Length: 281
Image (cartoon, rainbow, N blue to C red):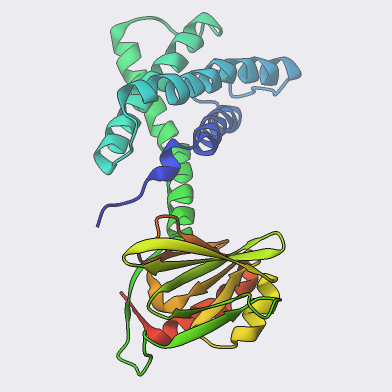
């Protein structure tokens, strides 16, 4: 099964990563005073000037991370995969560690530009950056997995007859249409009308019924055609897949391209009815 890393390309993830790296590194420098930032003074005192200097020191790191994520990464790859993420994280460690090395010398004048010093910096600073990078990645990965639902559904062996006709009635005596459970797909509210979508001769057809979605849903009173959203009612018998997240799931209907949303208020009842007639895999 192909893993979903779509969160990795979002602006929210990139900004959160950049902030986390800069803040974590700033706090690490302040609390642990590594790399001789206190000139190895055992009696080092925290002064406003020192705190400001370290803050200024972290600005190039933050801007470099934004440049890396928003400008450089799109030039390398568009769609994230596990191999690409591993490659990019290694590059990010090297790139940001190099920025720190240059800032360390140019702003702080605490070190030197020797190759041995540079290589040592790459190792030491990368070991620090691993923590915020891994933390942000696994947080968003966990949240992504929590929000993902992807099920294929098949109809259970039951007595539901798809040839059963359902009478959809509007406000007028002649405003009605008979559709079978095998043909009807869903209904969508359209101002004072409900647009019924059904299949006829293997083509999608539409029929406007003058009524409200609430009145139509109440008049049907069955567990196969149900209200799933303030704007939709759906034929659960025609659902072939369920996708979505904790805030909203979507029903994929046979012969219909766009999925039908299920809002929070209808989620529990919709899934309960769906489980009665479908097997989830």
